[in-house]
Length: 88
Image 1 (cartoon, rainbow, N blue to C red):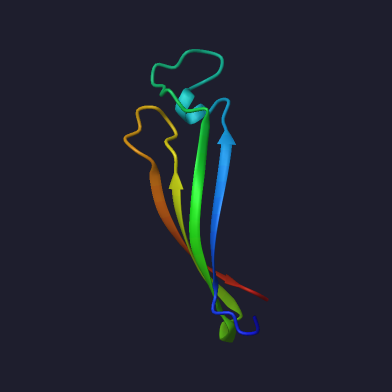
Image 2: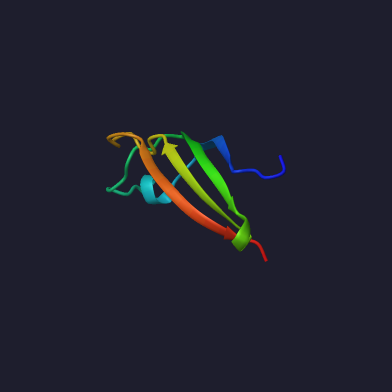
């Protein structure tokens, strides 16, 4: 394409977590304020990137669906990100 208007994208990221200090507590002694965390979490990302040729920049929006990090969580975390990238 000579004059692209932008493009969309979809991505999946999966992670295995052995121990998360801020959720599971310390390794060497039992912490009374711990959560039971999931050892497998994943993110699903969808977004769109639009070039801004005059400014030699890209404007992108990404929406992320993150699976539950710990067992008592009420649901998955979702958030959006708006970014501007400039080429020099």
